[in-house]
Amino acid sequence: MRVIVTVVEKIISEAHIDIPDGLNQSAIRQHIVDRYNTGEMSTDMNIFQVDFESISARIVQKKIFS
Figure 1 (cartoon, helix red, strand yellow):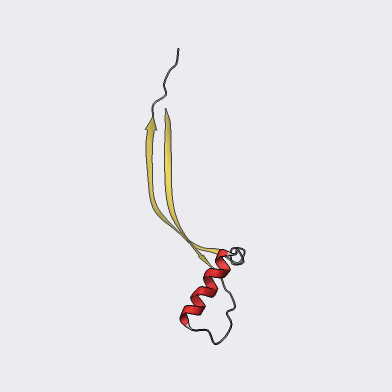
Figure 2 (cartoon, helix red, strand yellow):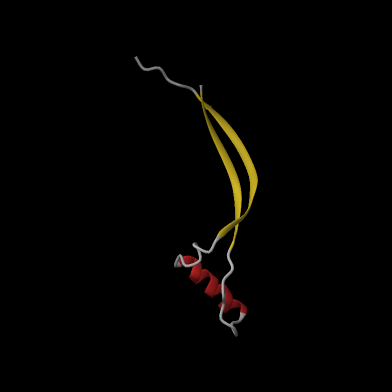
């Protein structure tokens, strides 16, 4: 018997970054998004917490070919 198991987890990552002083909320948000989109922040991201969301299994019937 073959079973396909799917596990869904929510991973929370944390990054400590420096942001220039004097930016308003919108500019701070854009600065963070830009760093993430360019990949600069991905190396700073550390897994902070993993929450189990769900698990499911599906039985797959093997077909016999002649």
